[in-house]
Amino acid sequence: MTQTQYTIKALTEALSKGEVSSVELTREALKAARDDSNNCFISLSEEHALRQAQDADLQIKQKAGCFLTGIPMAHKDIFCTKHSTTTCGSKMLKNFAAPYDATVVKKLDDAGMVCIGKTNMDEFAMGSSNESSFFGVVHHPWDFDYVPGGSSGGSAVAVAKGYVPFATGTDTGGSIRQPSAFCGVTGLKPTYGSISRFGMIAFASSLDQAGPIGVSALDVAHLFAFMSGFDKRDSTSAKRQDNWVDSVKSEGFTAQHTPKKIGLPSGPILNMISYQKEFETARRQIESAGHSFIEVDLPNLEHSVPVYYVLASAEASTNLARYDGVRFGHRCSEPKSIEDLYKRSRGEGFGEEVKRRILTGTYTLSVGYFDDYYVKAQKIRRKIFDDFAATFSKVDAIMLPTTPDTAFKLGSLDDDPVSMYQQDLFTVPASLAGIPALSIPCGFHNDLPVGLQLIGPANSEKTILEIACEYQKNTSWHLTRPNSNYVLERF
Amino acid sequence: MTNKTNHIDIAHLANLAKVEIDEATELKLQDDINSVVKMISKMMEVDTTDTLPLKSPLDSPQRLRPDEVSENPNQGLLQRGAPETKGGFFTVPRVIE
Image (cartoon, rainbow over all chains, first blue to last red; front, top):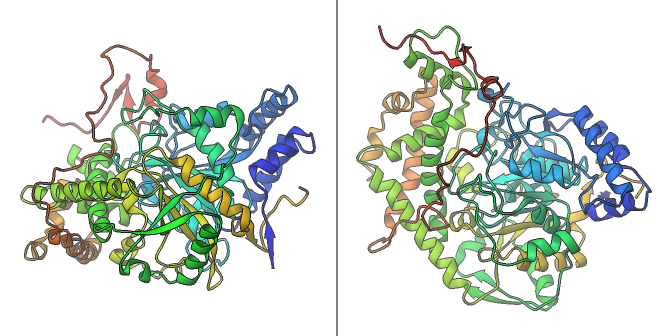
């Protein structure tokens, strides 16, 4: 009924033994991406990819590569790349050619990875379903009539379909974790500030964070290590105090087993999820691996969604002011005045969801409402931050569902933005607190994948990845793929 | 707070945000933003007396770089995505009559 997908670890071993070349892997990935019917990609970069693959093969031959050298991957089309357009899923940037590479792009290029193309996404990363892209909806890998989640839906599907074993994502309120859960792949939203935002098109700057979407937690640990690091070009980039990332890059990541204390929120919040049985089974499996669970209280969890939508919309309305039809992006034809130029360029260039968020942000920031909404939301953000800090004095990590339910049908929430926003209930708290959160597949409900989330204090990626690696040693949900998949069967 | 949600003037907001919207979109956004504002108004239930706002999870002043030239940007490259340029300038419709 299902097939399994191979990890970067397996492909790296095959590359180093000479069983396959990067050029061969890249040609196969490009062919699969060309034949894709799920609409994962906005653009493909065939010549660029093959050039990178040839360079990678040389590096591997000279034994100068690293864990990631020669592996085909894709970038979410929110990362600026010199070699192709960067659209952010918007008509506004349909033809935008960035003059520089994002730091994340440069770091993965330097590691010898091969970028085959740019993945589809919700416009300006605003969405939980990948239906707001100017380039069309992305279809779920297991059921074509369902959404893949968003906003990094193209990246999650490209990994779930086996076109590439890794794609970059960005997560403002769940945009890596929610599509990862919906599609049955592993996605990490790292600690705020740990991966550079330079060259990553801004949505909500106090929340935006890049991260990897991959097959396994082991792969994701390596990807995180190569993507992260202080960047003077990003004023919110933070320096890590430990040398864990450097050791993963030089020696690789081996998950150590040390019993962890894991918190589960008390109260009715977990009764809200449709896949309680699968979630509880996963909890027991983690417990039987030697970890212990205790109930914890996160009293402001339920306020996270309103707080998030005030802050993210406010930040979006200011960040997106730069799209004025003057320096780059869409410009309306024959503007009669500067006012006409701004209004029509933005009216034509932005889609409905983006306009909704800009106007919501404009409203909450306007005179008379600023304190009621924006400052109030920032104060509750502090409470959420403090709730997590108090909880992490008692536990090493917190386990939550990633989403309230499985993927939903395409178009089913089109007319109900509030219900769409409620999809983010379990993902926005970690975003507001700026702490790392990892989504891993934990089974199937109604024949669709579901995920659980491991959340830790700032800079505790190692801890949550170790718990996940151990869980994935004992389960195979992360390797389970639909029959129709493209897979690298020879390994 | 609930009274405020009855007076959301979408055309005024669109003008402030410099986004042209047609009548059909205005009607749809009116309903949508009303329901979003109703949802976010639930925050008022939370007691935030004596709580300081948190602007960023880093919760520290933003790092500033030294005021010195660190890069040599290529003007042509930076302007290649501009809708309209003339003699190295970005051009817009006449602003001063």
